[in-house]
Image (tube, rainbow, N blue to C red; front, side, top):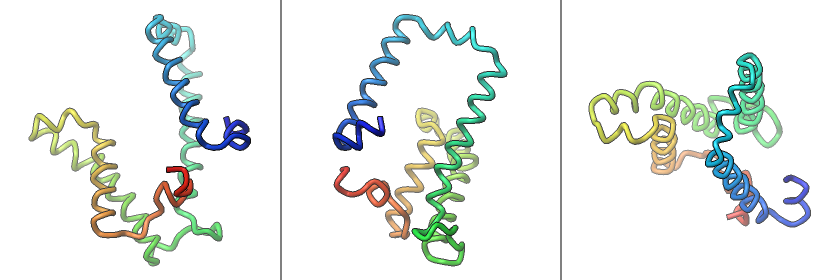
Length: 142
């Protein structure tokens, strides 16, 4: 996929994602989900653990400056980045589940989605100096 995007532009990435989604829908409709029972549990656990490490490594770049050093929690960018991270984690683990206990309509929103949306709205409202997707991918992508 990376070579295709490099040679033909980022427009192919959306098509690739859509095609992957259609393949997943077709596989699910064909009943291929039951084949996962053939994969041993230790293999699935190892795969998921490896995937989590890859995702962690990819996310750590957002906590680094352009020079490659980790942001200081005392700098404006570092305080906003670490603060937004802590706010999101608190909302996901504590805030949204408490709200779901009291309001039935809130159960329709997964805590992770609610935490990210609320944190993003708060960060935008208070104009926190955070990296956005447009900063990382480039404004021309959108």
